[in-house]
Length: 300
Image (cartoon, rainbow, N blue to C red; front, top):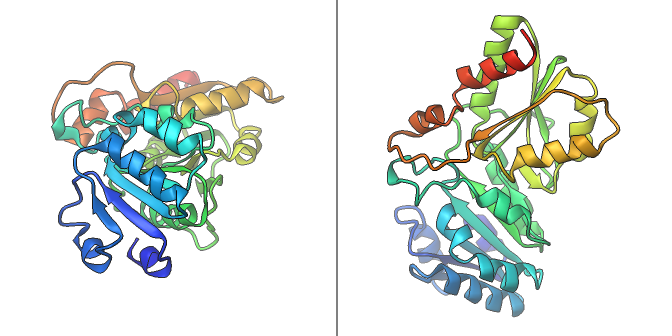
């Protein structure tokens, strides 16, 4: 973001009173274009809309649960209705604030952002995608929601990857099963592929989908033609996320009916407190549990 703000004098950065030990360099470098609005998310979106109407490119940054739900009406009416150049950057998607309780669990954000006209929704799965998604959204003039989490330590980048909003990336080739992953749970997806290969000998194709809206429909349909089962994986509610989008796409396509299994967070509040891995396991999203469900679906 430092480089983006250096290269574009029209960028203004707003934060909802967070980012300490992370945003100080931005504040020091651009004191006139860095505004700490305080714990006032609705006001922050209103300020962002006003700045965008004067020709500014605005970034708003906060914890994802607060940034999407508290000011939702303002995002809808002030940003999306007017199709303004505002980038909404939410940190801590899914269970990344696992020890803070359900107020900080962000499990509905993709769904509610997805239904807004004009809004782009990006959920990068690891550090390269996060960097490239940021660059791409800053080139775009459309409202964009960027959902961030902790990047897996593994780097899944390949030399031929060129990021574009609306594009998916084949991380692992496989002829038997297709697994579509969005958000920072890609490492779990790769582990699922290994478990299934070791237990059944079946090869799983793993595709990263950092762009949920627009979705790489062409890649999904082309890959689905070649496999026995399609699955999705996301650290988000079962309703309204990647799984819902893929299910709708497949149901409206002319492809023969395929077994489909979405892996996502159940339709309950998980009140336990613990590590992210603990909560994912509680939600049924551990690699072993997901792999077992896929194998069962295939009748293996």
